[in-house]
Image 1 (cartoon, rainbow, N blue to C red):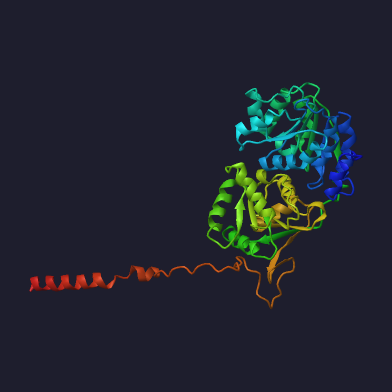
Image 2 (cartoon, rainbow, N blue to C red; image 1 turned 180 degrees about the horizontal axis):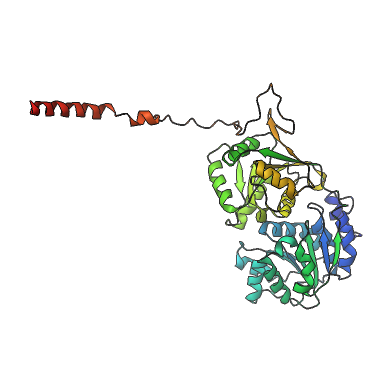
Length: 420
């Protein structure tokens, strides 16, 4: 991909010196209107890989010509922000349309007739069905994180949006992991895309340690608190479901831990503030689910914590891809028991997952010596919790108090007098 001269200053200002393998590989097919499946590791520059070849094909004032779908609101807004300066350089407008944002405000943005829209399928379908968004001029439909978006119910939503577009629309699917659904695109969309897979030759990810910290369910919160008190530690903390995330958040609110939650229930502004707090180091932990954490790009994020071990290889790969981006080092920490560790080794054998220990305030793969105290199952965080109020032992609680004892003695004396 030869960078357009109008884009070169933005490219240089971002600190890019060379194209990544996916950027170089997909440029020509995208420019030539071919349908594409692009597979590349997380953090390999997929957004610019499709944006830079596609933007120059658009005509200013020509209506919505490029539609980019993302599985989460955060990823949609992140993609919009990456593309917007490049689009502005050639007088194109980019609008983000996501579910939690104010609909009236979004409709006002559409009045400016943007050439590029980035959004989540649910909100886009809502606007298309209401006749407020027209795709009659669409040239290209990009499905980012396609392995996730083509799973139910996302597949039906993507197909309905495709049906609202012209028959000659170009399709591009991008992902960090493969999916059996990619072999069925002819069935679902009537296309046979060229498949470009650079995962084996792309080395943009930095050195990432994969650690497994052994603990039981009862002590995972204590481990999380201990990790949060390490110096210069920040992490995305992944949960397999919202219920456990919310339960853990309630407990952490009473501990000396700075954290935020990326919840699908919050308004967009709250979610944006939570991400900004982690990026700026105002919080140590950002609690997320797999969907909310998909594709997030947080520069120089030191770590990812799997509070619960993922059950799918794709989930582990996408979680791990949040750290070690653009050549930076990173650490992936999974909390679990022996059963979790065995399952994880079968799930992602390509990673060298080693046992992790917390020794002298440092994460290490070296077990404490026999002479030293063993790594604790439930590490004590540096902030001391308030002392619990003393309660009587069960035996003491069962022992009658002095007042009832006096009453019985008086009653016995009275009854004794009656019998005499």
